[in-house]
Image 1 (cartoon, rainbow, N blue to C red):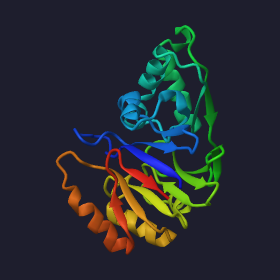
Image 2 (cartoon, rainbow, N blue to C red):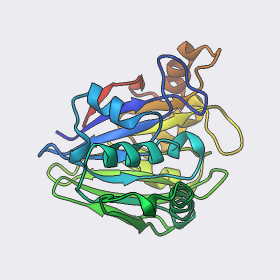
Image 3 (cartoon, rainbow, N blue to C red):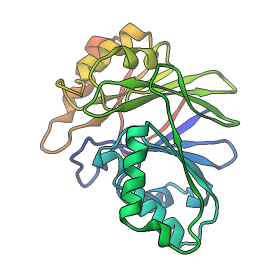
Image 4 (tube, rainbow, N blue to C red):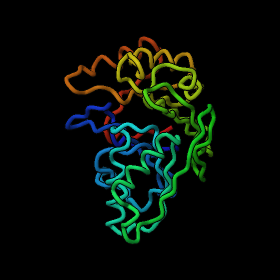
Length: 252
């Protein structure tokens, strides 16, 4: 079975038990892919038993601080710990250009014996390829947020099962394309408004797309009552709904 671990589940304002949203997609050979990068990634990875040297790729959905502020710490700590394996960073050109500029502001080109880092741009259309390896085929679609943003569609190459991840978006055609027939739809639930989606809207998208299961993520925890999110989504979806929590493991 394909497996994903939630490293963080909160929207832009985290709390003591909910880090900003980022995910680890595990391969069958022990290698893994990071989706977005927040907080102290190496420490979060150590907690779930993943070694940074087994990280092959980092996918960045968009250039907002809560999705990218851990990138510089990830690269620096892996460098200081002696990593030599190359790292590929995938994302929309808007995002990659800014991440590279951020690293240049840290003078990373002067860091001696820094491991190779390459930037792999993702096109802005439904079905744009992100990466493919022995375990997964990952496609993307542009979604509707404040800056250029991609959602992801992760296909298990052995079973053809699909996990869709909306990332930050309000309801839009790309979001629906990602979710179509997904075995698991992981959808943001930060609240109805420009660039975001409520739990009820996420349920509507899951129902319209024919998704089998809905997992709510990227929700507000700061002084909010999160107990209403699942019932709200269930009422609109009519199928099983789960609220993502930090270090939750998903299989599909």
